[in-house]
Length: 84
Image (cartoon, rainbow, N blue to C red; front, top):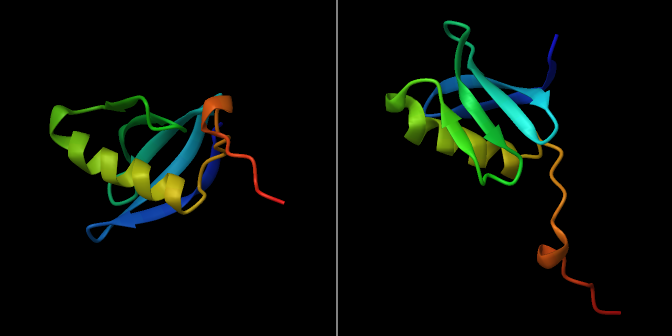
């Protein structure tokens, strides 16, 4: 069983974000309980179950990361030291 990380709403449709494996999340449309696709926590990989859902999946993935529905950690080259 997958662990639900939360829900996001895009264009009036609600999607469930679930942890699928390390740094990979599954997106399920709540309306019909259909898998829309998967994305990596750094958004470098986005895989849509159907080609027509790719743009929507990108928006859902972006919203999920922005709203903290994933466990994202910056890579070393992206980490900026805070100034004292």
